[in-house]
Amino acid sequence: MEQINVVSPESPVKVAASAELPAFGNLLKQSLKMYEVLFRKVVILALISALALLPLMLVIFSFGYLGGESQAIKILLGVLFAAALVLLIYVATAVQAATLFLLADSNLGVGEYFKKGMSLVWRVIVVSFLTGLLTLLWTLLLIVPGIIFSVYYSFAIYALVYENQTGMAALRRSHQLVKNYWWAVVSRTIFLSLIYLAALLVVSLPLYFLPDNSVLAIFWNMVLSALRFITSPIFVIFAYLIFKELVKIHPHTQDTMGVGVKGSALTNAAQKTV
Image (tube, rainbow, N blue to C red; front, side):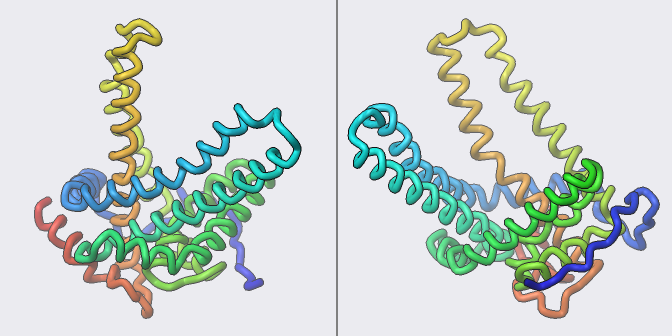
């Protein structure tokens, strides 16, 4: 296995950056603009991931009715459960990569993005596993280093998709990008999360006045679930814009997706509107 040079979790407060990321307001406006333009394709990709959950739910539902039957049926349901879980992970990972391809180039069809995403599934899974493993190890050491390095490694998948960095190299590249900008990345992400939670809280207010388990309460919960589903890609777009800005500061010579200094035509257009 390729080795990674793990640096000590020094406090990000002590590190001074030589260049600044765009202000939170500008990043948010660009994110919303890109989300508006890409809404249909982003939602379709998200629906593909959601549909992959149906076989797993069907198997779980079947356990409730057939779980008490013969041992052979239990074994069959167990095999189907494992197959459905693998399918869900595979499709969700392909959609994750496909969405990142979409953000860099919006001119292809959804099927083409999904096909490109499938080509990276196993590499994305490996990078995700390594990210989770190293973050867990840092967390077992102390909680604070776990939090710090989870941010350092947060762009590993982006480095894989856009710069063809695989395995530990993707984690090293992510660490290189975030170093000196830890607080800048975290603060902007926290601001976005707070605004998002505040918006959801406002939309959820009717539930406080509706009787529990009433038809209206059930309907409104469905509306909230749909809103969370269709708006969650905003976080991916926001992270993509931060990644693109970090790449401008630390360009990579093998930037295969064109998200370096120039960026994509879509993000450049979004910047002009701000």
